[in-house]
Length: 109
Ligand SMILES: [Zn+2]
Image (cartoon, rainbow, N blue to C red):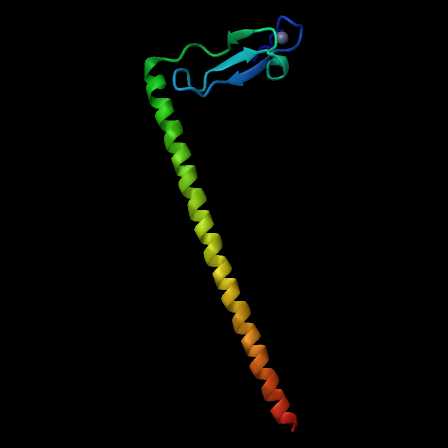
């Protein structure tokens, strides 16, 4: 990947577009764009997307995002179940210690 120098003399930054019109197409932009708008450099690194990928990629990105969302929800449910399991074990052990403790006292008498 060849570097490009922008109008203010810095090495241009490679950025990726995630918009529906040009998804995942990379371009060179000014490094100081976030700070002060930069020098306005804008030049494409990747060739234009064909109509087919313009139509397909946004759909793929959307399905990846919804899969990640579903996975996040599943993880949350799993954490809750694990917590309930541990909590019930703690209660069980506490109960067991309490009952075996009182039995021990009985044996001493
Ligand atoms: Zn610049």
